[in-house]
Length: 563
Image (cartoon, rainbow, N blue to C red; front, top):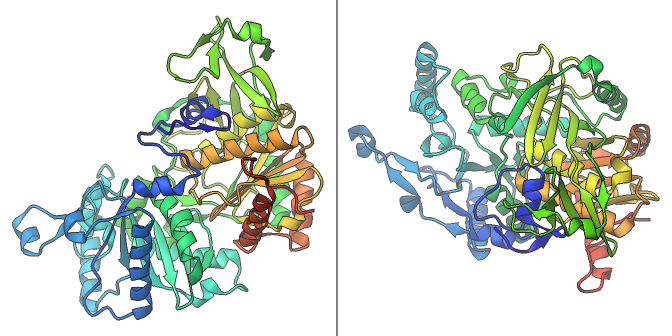
């Protein structure tokens, strides 16, 4: 665990406060160079007679850049063991070791014979299908005739597949809409059974993963891309929150003012067009075996959606919200933490010492509850009786409440991929911007960005130059937590709206008033200053870099309104 402080607390302390899973060998999420040292990748040999020289040239440069930045590039012969069995050994069939974090391959065209045998394999799989099979058992049963890389890994939960292919002109066309580009990206992810697909052209390249980004980079950006975008994605792969970590219960949506408010918020944001209806995997994946693999990896989720909406309920306290230092001094440290910034009183309530704008505050860690759209739902047409779930955070423990009388075994009743991020935002807001959350905090996440010149008085953004960490990761949640702390420490009580930028993913926008947020976003969309897709991300990065250069050495990074 990195011993440095982060948002005035130890990394481990923030992880404990926000209920996130602890991890070994954790590094500061702002330091991709440290991430690179912990990443091991391999390149699968090119197919015989492969002749796309543009992709081959990029592949060689990518290998060199990964090595330059400290990633261990393991030769294929060392990374992949020959599997047991007479036929496997005769054909020299290999399985990539669990210690390899990514396999980089190229898209492989199927011959007519391969297509025929693949169809036969799928027929056999259909007759012998067993829902209890593991991912590897499914791939073994159905993938023997296929040539996708996923079937060559020992542990698909630990080893990601990155596929290089020619860049499709439509994906690179600035005039093509975001949802059309993402349809192309999803098709390629599914066709190659990959976590990441990169499109390669002579002068540029693209990246798409399950974050549903449409990122395009010029070749001269390769060095920055490898360290700040690709390495973080390999180091911290997208993973949905595991249901087993939550204590489960029910709530009655008809008696929840926040469930109704959330459904109303969904209807309000429809006019912005920032929340298109999600995509069902069944619409994109033709083969049952592939659907079963995705079902296992995504822990039952049946599709992907474009962002989330949530309302963090007013924080709940027991006893004094803040105490004097003399009272704090009598509290006991938490045995589970090696950080004297967190203590507990005689009743077991946690208190944290915070330093905001030069003043020490000793405040209670509240119970956090959030009403949020369930994973895969249509955010602009939520049924408050079945599409809203409550996630809770009490003394570092996670809670999940599903709508009363709705079967928890329904595959679409799942908390958002961004659950850890949402909880981190709510906890940081309660501790550092209590005025913002005292009556409930609306949070909108969409897969696009605003023009930096869109921000007005008392509206701030942060995070544009952070490493591109995927949703669902502890690292992304930590960056959001820290961004709120830094914005609060810098701007005091003047904040009406916060925008937390997540490169290659989108933005999280939150503020005092739902109507105000929707009005500002609608106006921004109408005037072309807010839109889906990555058009404005480079401008946000550039503006943030300019602000950094104006700062004196040792001061906090400043990302404020452009005017």
